[in-house]
Amino acid sequence: MPDTDVWVGTWRPHKIRGPIAAHYSSPGPKYALPGLTGINNHDPSKFKAPEYSFGIRHSQSRADASPGPRYLVPYNITRVGRDGTPAFSLYSRSNVPGLFKGPGPGHYSPEHSEKSVFFSAPAYSLSGRSKEFRSNQTPGPAAYMLPSVLGPKTVNTTAAPTYSLCGRSKIGSFHEDLRKTPGPGAYKMIDPCIYKQKAPQYSLTGRNIMPGETTKKPGPGAHYPERVTFTRVKAPSFSFGVHHSQYISPLIVNVAE
Image (cartoon, rainbow, N blue to C red):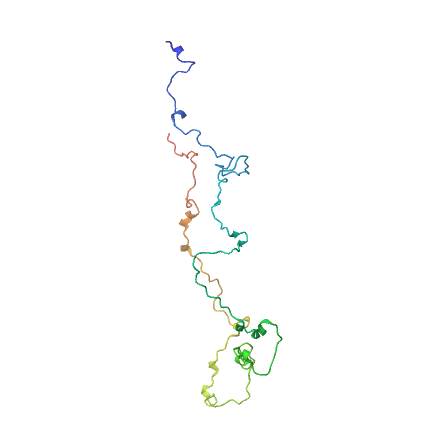
């Protein structure tokens, strides 16, 4: 069979030149972006529009959660409570509960509630207290003692200067022994500049020290010029010659013939 009948066109089998996608197994278009419609698997980065349905209700809404007619309401219970028909039983009567013992009329004393119930005007008397106020234990005016406002030892007022009119006793004072009197050296004179504004001071004597600046200045040994590389790439270099260009031919004086 000739070759022209097997192959169609100019294509012939050949060795592949590089990798192609058919040689690799990939899931293909398996992954897709989440949808923008519906409530299930909605794209979380997009807003949901209001949803309406024209179908039947969801199955969960049709589930009835009420217990139904499982409770038996007694026949003698009406909408207003228990009916009033007499009821009888064949059981024996239970123990009779004790009667409620409430207070009688003699337990109350309404005559003692005049000042608690009714309004009354203030009343004053010069006689002793009646029996109704025997239990009153409020303190009287004599139970309080206000601090004194006279003398040098007052609590809530400013004490005025106090003076005495009696003579000074010589017994036990410095009049008996003059050695007990303090001398001029016993008092310490306070500089008035402490509690008053200090006045300018002047002197008439000559100055013994020439005025000058007393601040400490750095000497030559306090500087480190070799540490200039902290702020520069390299330290500056100096030479005593001249710079020669590499493009200038050298000067030849003695030429050999």
